[in-house]
Length: 126
Image (cartoon, rainbow, N blue to C red; front, side):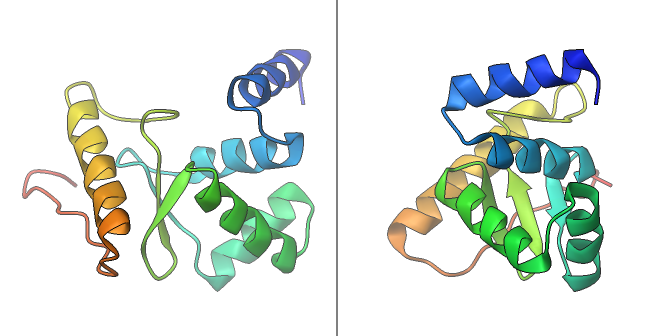
């Protein structure tokens, strides 16, 4: 890891007041996401993620839980997570507003206790 990356991690951790391990895990997870800020973490991908971080599967499960509690990610469906676009996004120009709206909808559904996590996908998104 370069010194620049360490500074980025440190700055990010300070801004969000997160433990370093959670910051590193979140940045690695966001690196795995697509342009729609979604990331799949099925069992095979959790193993890959654990290897990337150098931790066990149980630690990955705990990190994912901690990221959800911190508001960094939201569970969309089994094994699919949506990364908070207010923190990190890979949106194509013009799509960021749509990602933020989807995030707000997920937060509202969670507040209402609705257990259906669905992100609507526009027909022109791929």
